[in-house]
Image (cartoon, rainbow, N blue to C red):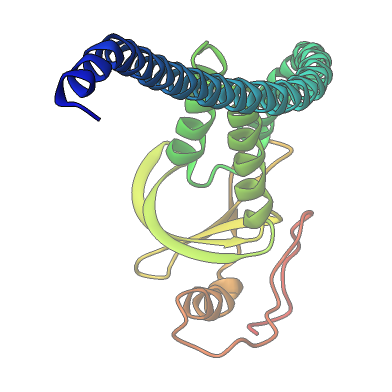
Length: 256
C-alpha cells in the first residue's frame, strides 16, 4: 500500500481511537464511582447494623433493668408492709406499757409506803440505815427521769434486804437508852424475832418489847446465854442451841 494511503487510513482511524479511549476512561471512572458508592453503602449498612445491635443490646438491658426494678419494688412493698405491721405492734405495745405504768406506779408507791410503816413498827435495829433506804425510795418515786422499771427494781431490792434480816443472826455495838440513861452496849438480833442488848460489863441485859415499844430489863440469869449468842453472831464460836426468852419473859430456872 502506498505510504500516502497508510497515512490517510491512520488519520481516518485516529478520531475513532480517541473516541474509544475517552469512553473507556469514562467507563472506568464510572466503575470506580460505583465501587466507591458500593463501599460507602456497605459502610452505611454496617454502621446501621452496628447501631441496630447496640439498640437491641440497650433494649435488652432496659428490659432486664425493668425486671430487676419490678422485683426490687416488690421487695420494698413487702418490707413496707412488714414495717407497718411492726409499727402497729409497737404502737400497741407502747399503749400497753403506758397503761401498765399507770397501774404499776401507784402499786409501787403503796409498796414504799408499806415498807416505811413496817420499818417504823419493826424492831429498832439499823434504824438510820433502814430509814435512809426508805427516804431514797421516796425521792426516787418523785423523779420523772427514772423509769417505772427502775423504781420497781429498787423497791423489790429494798424488800429483799428487809426479808434477809429475818434469816440472820447479827451482833453489833451501839448506844441504847434505857431507864432514862444512854449507855454503850452490845446488841444481839435474832432474825427480826427478838432484839437483845447486854452492857459491856455483862451486868445488865434487856430486850425490845414490841408491845410496849420500849426496852425492858432481863434477869441476870440470861448473861451467859447472851454472851454465847454474841460470840456465835460474831463467828467466834460454833453454833449451839441457845435458851433465850420470848415474850412474855419469865424468870429462868438457871443459866444455860
